Length: 142
Image 1 (cartoon, rainbow, N blue to C red):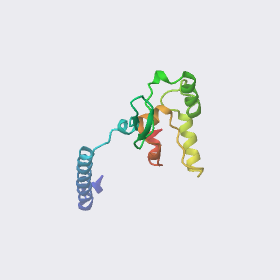
Image 2: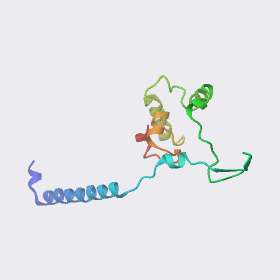
Image 3: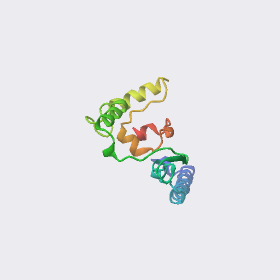
Image 4: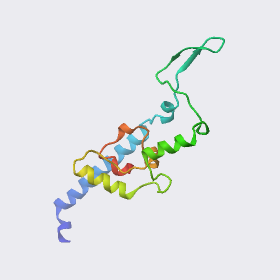
């Protein structure tokens, strides 16, 4: 451990510590000054429906043409069909699937395209938009 007493090692440790403090400070400032938009604001946006006095629809105004339906209004068979198409093991596995993560990592490493092993639970927790999928985010979203 004699090398720790050399002046250039001490200087390197001090510079590294100083750079760490600068980085930690910059991260803290960025973290507390960044406004995160509410994902529900976009998801729950609907178009405005203009109607005649008798209730007939004249037209719709707005970027989103959707009607919010409570979960109870969606048939059970449709819910199961969507889950089966996206994640067949939704009811039988936990929040993450280690085999799917391994498969995705191997396929991505072999150049077969970016793949992940995320379950629906992981996807809903980590990202309101599937366009956010990147190679660097895959381990955190899986």
